[in-house]
Length: 162
Length: 153
Image (cartoon, rainbow over all chains, first blue to last red; front, side):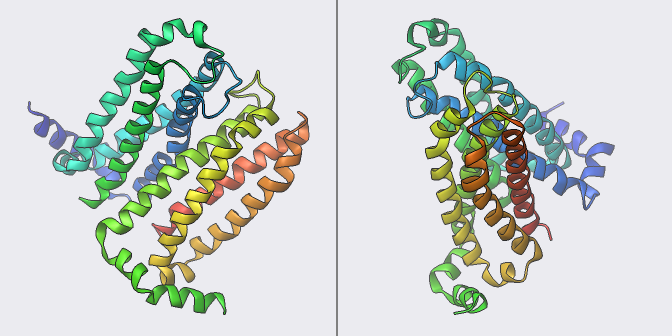
């Protein structure tokens, strides 16, 4: 089964049809999706800005990251859950949408970025925990993260315009 | 000049009409509004949830609030600027829109609350600071919901 066929199949499931055809359900899920941006991208940005030494300079990086991460995960769950439902309702349309495709690519890269970060430079966080600005590889991760998540929000909004 | 004539002026301003009529002009401002929402909402959530003992628990909430104040102010300015452009492009629709009117009232209340009650209550951990955090979260969420409703109603 090709990806297009899978999208078509998902598009025709009962759940997808119910969301698509309801006047209320789709906007409600969309609202959850939009407001959860703050919880996901907002908290990610706060950790990134700490790595860059722009905010919370006197707080340890590990404390900021460790305490904020659970909030980011809640945001991620809300975003992913609502996002999957929105996708289901428009699966066949989304397949051909360039903004949607671009957003999916950005999401994969945005997911890999912290995975690599935590397995490399963050391992030695105790050595630079109290420094105002993190080492350049961590700052690079932060710039990448800010760019990727901004791109995801922008591409997400653009989906409606194609 | 009355509010209505201000909105009527915006409805006829050539620059705002150009933004309304160009597909990507309006979309770009919307994107800026959303990016600023992430930053503003993120700071509100982190500060207020911290006061309630979720997230930032080991730091003094007043310190977190002070450290995040520039991010809050910057994103608030970005929201107001992009929001003003969005309203300008749809001036007459907004003027008579109940969700828009409600949003403006809630927004004024949220900003006022932030710089008065919230600011003074955040210093000392108490039932009052917790109440201020709940109040702030409720007001900002209501602003967001009313804003979202402008697009649906």
